[in-house]
Image 1 (cartoon, rainbow, N blue to C red):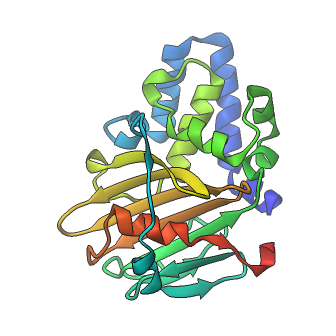
Image 2 (image 1 turned 90 degrees about the vertical axis):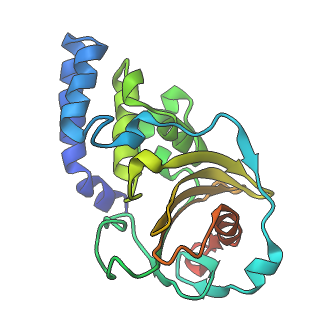
Length: 241
């Protein structure tokens, strides 16, 4: 899996090496301009200039709502999902939020799971920065902003943020929160509108497993509390047991 992911990010590696050259001979302003020219700026990708609310929101899942959901068991992840959604387990080697498996008008939920320490195994140099688990990686990525690029590490997390952010509709409307519940914590980027809702959930459980739940709510049947209840049911699949 690691080899496949590294292969998929070959372009990113080349881009990062180029940034190393730039930062060695230039300051933060030139480095910022270089990143913006490669992936976009605040106008083209507004979320690169947004960060979650400072206050961590504590949620209590709605157990009665969870009882009305349908259990799905995949090799790598298990979850309860409400009726009316197509559900897909994806592998990180594939651009799960870009590949058009279903018509844009269909409600669909994409699921992804990786084990504890995944990002540190993928990028071992992060350990020197004190980033030694999946949650710390997500925190550094979510709070990164183009306007705060001062060195190579800042640029790296902005690039990661652009890669890991799926389609959220009008990004000018996106809200970002940091949440916690009894056995999980993470971040939710979401857009709620009269015509289409999007939820991008990055979740880490108490064992350190990383889950990604991306929801295209084409019928606007979900709200934040319902999404929290859905992700509260996440657990590793039998393949990870």
